[in-house]
Length: 98
Image (cartoon, rainbow, N blue to C red; front, side, top):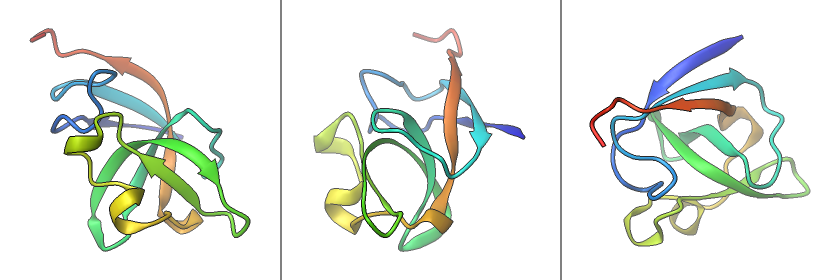
């Protein structure tokens, strides 16, 4: 199953820009380096797009924003559990405003 999500903010610049749209596959299977759609561990109503960096033995993932000075990511909240992983980005398209 596929879903889409809009990028809001600059935590993933330069790879993604606010206003970009992403299509993601709903899965918990990630690979290092892929873009992951995850729920914020401390704010389950907030959905984030981050780069999957490494898998931990318990199945959780360390995720980081590409723009470290602007990103709320695993450096602040720790790893995301498998239950918080919503999917893996398969396509980006730009809004045309860049």
